[in-house]
Image: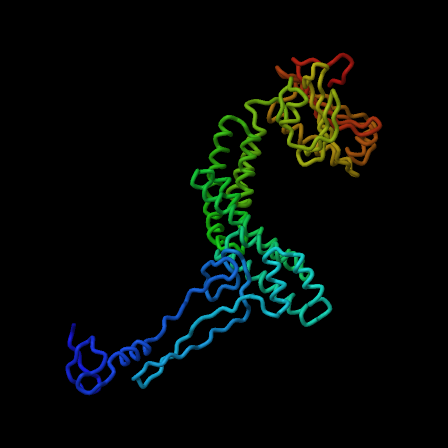
Length: 452
C-alpha cells in the first residue's frame, strides 16, 4: 500500500481507497477518467480480407494474393480528447476500405476476377455492366489502374514475379481492355527476363566468363532498375574483352593463323566498334595474311595449286577453270588482266599480264611498255635478248604510235633466268598485243598448253 494525495482536498490517503476519507472524493472514478484520457493506440497495420496477410495502408493490391484494394481511399481524422487538459490532440487513423461485398458491380466484378471465378464475373458483366457506358468506362479505367499498379509493384519489388503474373493473368480475362492488360503482361515478362539476365550476368562475371557476362548485361532493358549498373558493367567489360581478343590475335599471328587472328580482331570490333587502333591492327594482319617467305611473281610460287593461288590472291577472281584463273588488277598504273595457267597436275607454271587499257593515241602504249621494261631491267638486269623490229614503212608514219598501229613497229624483250623466263611483247599485227609473261623453267606445261 502507498500513500497518495487526494486530487480534491490534498490530504494523504491510501492508494487502494475507493473514496477520500477526508472529503469523500471518488478516487476510483478519477483513476478511470485518467485512463480514458489517454489516447487510444492507432492501428497502423491492416490485413487483407482475402488472405489475412498484413498489408500497408498505401498498398493498392495485396502483396501476398494480389487482391485489389479500394481506389482513391483517403485517411479519416480521429480526434482524441485528454480529460483535464485544455488542448485537444488530433491524430490520423489510416483505414483502407477494401473491395468487399458492396453493391458496386465494378467492385464485385474485379473481386471475381482476382478469385479466378470467371463464370460469375461474366454473368455479372452481362447482367449489370454491359451496355451501361458509365460502368463500362469505370471498369475499363479501374482495370487499367490496377494493371499499372501490379506492374509498378513488381517493378519496385513489393510483389513477386509469380504473384504479378498470376494477378495480371486474371485481369486478362476481363471483357474490357484485354489488349492493354496484355501490354502490361508483356512488360512484366520483359522485366522478368531482364532481371534474370542481370542475375546470370553477375554469376558469369564472378566465374570470369567475361564474354557471357557482357552479352547478358547488354540484354538488361532500360526500365529495369539494374539498367544503369548493367550499362556500367558493359562499358567496363568491353575494354577487358577487347584486350583479350587482341592478345589472342597476336598469338595466332605468331602461329601464322592469319584468318583466325583477323576473326579475333573482328570480334573485338563487334564489342567496342571499329576504333582507329583496331582498324590499323586489322589492316596490318590483312597484309601479313598475304606475306610469303619467297615468291616468284605477284604473291605466288610456281608449283602452287589453284586453291593456294586463290588464298594469296588479293584481287577478285573473275574467271576460273580447271587450268586457269583470271583476275583484274593494275600494272604500273595500267589496267590489266592477270591470267594464271596450271598444268594437268594442278601446278602453276605461267603468269601473264595482258594490258586492258585502251588508248586512242598509240604513242601511250609505247610509253607504257618502255616504262615497264625499264623496271624489269632494274629488278632482273638487262634482257638476255631484245628484238625491236621497225619496218622502213614506219618512216612514212607521223609518229611511232601510228607505226605501231599499222604493224610497222614491234617490241620484244626476253630474260632467261635460272627458275623462269620473262618475256615482254608489244605488237599490232591485227589487234594490239601488250603482254608481260612469267613462265617456270622447272614446272612443265601440259602437252598442247599455252606457253611463252
